[in-house]
Picture 1 (tube, helix red, strand yellow):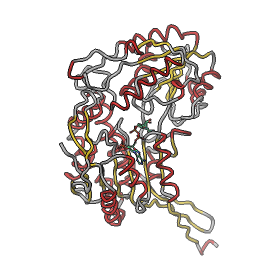
Picture 2 (cartoon, rainbow, N blue to C red; picture 1 turned 60 degrees about the vertical axis):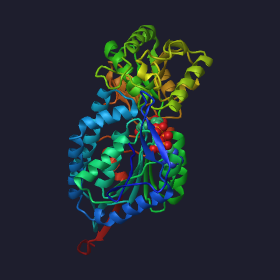
Picture 3 (cartoon, rainbow, N blue to C red; picture 1 turned 90 degrees about the vertical axis):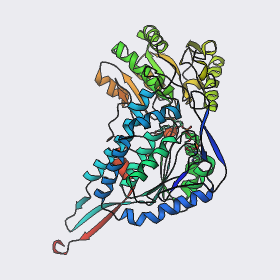
Picture 4 (cartoon, rainbow, N blue to C red; picture 1 turned 45 degrees about the vertical axis):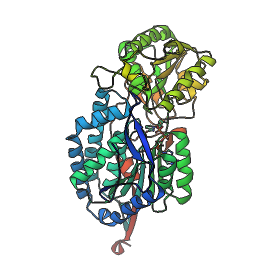
Length: 485
Ligand code: NDP
C-alpha cells in the first residue's frame, strides 16, 4: 500500500521519487510505503494552506465548530478501523487502541467543537473607555506529531487549530502514518474546504525541518523528543513563529506507606508499562517509602510478571511490541547501562530479555517488562528518558526526600502520588517541578485542564482554553467613551 500526501483537498503523488517503508512492529514485516516528501511538496502544502486561510478564517466560529463535529462523527463511524490500524501500525494492544486512541481521537474533535462554541470575547471596562478582546487565527500552522499515540495527538492539534480559524499542514511520524492518512480520508469524505487541512509524509530531518522553516508557516505545534524539540526551536524562534513544544519526560510515581496497597500496585504497574512504557506520561521511576519498600516491590514484581505480552490483535493482550528496531536497541542499551551501574533485575534483564512468542513474531521488536532495583537516584537509568518497558524502583525515608528525588531530573512533565492522606498527596504534588500530577490515579484526563511540561519537557501548554489561546492571537481594541470623560 502506497500512501500519498494530502494537499488542497486531494491525495497527490509526491514530487520526490523516494519512499520510506512502513514496518509492522509486531512482525517486522513491511506493509506500506510513504513518500519521503521534498521541499517542493512542503511548498505546495503550505501554499494550499495559505490560499485557504482567508476564507476559513472568515467563517463564524460556530460554523467551524460544526465542521469539527462532522469530522468527529465521521471518525466515530470508523472507530474499529482506527483501532485496528493503530494497533497494527504501532504494535500496541487492540484494547488499548480502542480505549485510548480511537476514543480520544473522536472526543478531541467534539470537545473542541463545544469549547469553541462556548468561547466568548472578553471586555474590560474603564471609567472612560471599554476594551474588547477578540481572538484571531494566527495563520498557517505546522503540526508535527510522534509515533506513540499517532491519531490521538494529531487530532489534539488539528481540532483546536482549525477550530480557531487557522489552516494547517500536518507531518506525522514516518513510523506511524496510517491513521493520519485515515484522518485525511475522513476529512475528504465530509467535504471540508480544500486546503484547510493538508498532510505531508516524510522524515523529520527533511520534510519536518522544511515545514518548520517555511517562511509562510506562522505557528509550530510540536510533540516529540527533547533533542528534536531543541532543533525545532532553533529553526522557528529566529522567525518569531508561535511555538508549542510538548517533549519528553522522566516521571515519578511516589508511593507512601499509607497508600491503598492493592490499588496502588495496579495503578503503578499500569502507569509504568502502558503502551510498553512508550507514553510520555509513564511513571518510569517508582519511589517507595522504606517502611513498605520490600512488600510493595514483591507485589509489583508479581503484578508485572502477570502482564500478558503477545499478539497485539488479541483481546487479552496487555503488552505489545516496541515501535521499531532502532528504538528497541536504544531501550535494550539501558539494560546494559543498568547492569554497568550495579542494578538488580527483578524482572526482565539480560537473562529474561525476550518474551516467548509465536514464530510469526520472531522478527518483531519485543522485550519483556523490566523492573530494576538497587540503582542510585543519580544513575542514568533513573534520570534519562528511556521510553520503553523499563522502570527503576527506589526507597525513600520521608516526604522531603521523596520530593528531592522526584525533582532530581531536568524533565518535568508529569507524576503521581499514592497515599490515603489526601492533604499530604496534594502537598507533595504541589512541590514537584512538573506540569501535571495525579493523586491515587494516573492518566486521568479532564480535557479542559492545561497539559504540558517544564524544563526539558517543553514550553507552553495545550488542552482546553490553553489550546485555544495557543492557536489564536488576542487583539485588544480600546474605545474611548467621550460621554464619560
Ligand atoms: P521525535 O522527536 O523523534 O519525532 C517527533 C516528530 O518530529 C516526528 O514526526 C519526526 O519525524 C519529527 N522530526 C524529527 N526531526 C525533526 C526536525 N529536525 N524538524 C522537524 N520535525 C522533526 O520523537 P518520537 O517520534 O521518537 O517520539 C517519542 C518522543 O516524544 C519521546 O521523547 C516522548 O516523551 C515524546 N512525547 C511527548 C509527549 C508530550 O505530550 N509531551 C507525548 C508523546 C510523546 P520522523 O518520525 O518522520 O523522523
